[in-house]
Amino acid sequence: GQQVMQIPQYQHVQEGEDFTTYCNSSTTLSNIQWYKQRPGGHPVFLIQLVKSGEVKKQKRLTFQFGEAKKNSSLHITATQTTDVGTYFCAVQTGANNLFFGTGTRLTVIP
Amino acid sequence: GAVVSQHPSRVICKSGTSVKIECRSLDFQATTMFWYRQFPKQSLMLMATSNEGSKATYEQGVEKDKFLINHASLTLSTLTVTSAHPEDSSFYICSAIVAASAKNIQYFGAGTRLSVL
Image (cartoon, rainbow over all chains, first blue to last red; front, side, top):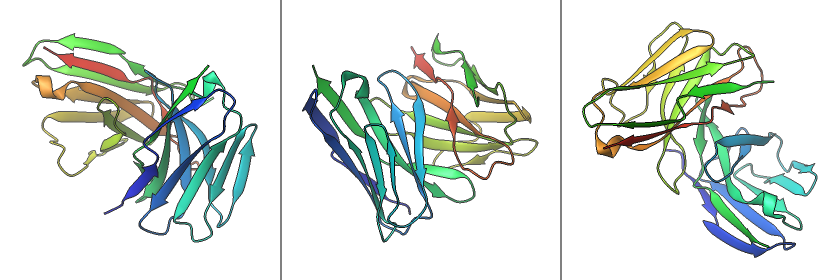
């Protein structure tokens, strides 16, 4: 079955430091999505990556899709307290279903 | 756009009662909706896929008679937790995909926190 691991599981950073979370799949992916879930909130779609080696940026967030389409990363530059939350990668299984990774919980210390 | 409303946001009930959770797409039609369960500090686990006008598809290990899903219209799916027990206490979240969209983006409701006493 589909296996999607995210590392690290937890990350504490000082405000202003960078943060990276990695998502690794056991199989080649057609695409990968990233979601953010604030504490007590619901997941919010951030981005979808489709092409091998693709890099997309959203302000301080940089998303990468590996050349082999088996891994992806999310990098946040100069974290802010508003970045606090859990970041999930999600991969498509079947027609529309998404399988969510284990998530990385980010804490930003002011 | 693409707003999903989930109601109620919080339910506290006695063991043995049934709880109904509604998931509505407010500004779009959704032929497919999803129901997830999330335990504290864990990832989202897909419970079932709800298709308008047909039976839901349940994931392995999810009892269809315990978690009744109805998707009677293009904007509404309901999840009924029947005869709830304390072990059913969890955060239930629905999501929806815009009908006929080429992008497989799921828009999530705010979730329902169920506490069974």
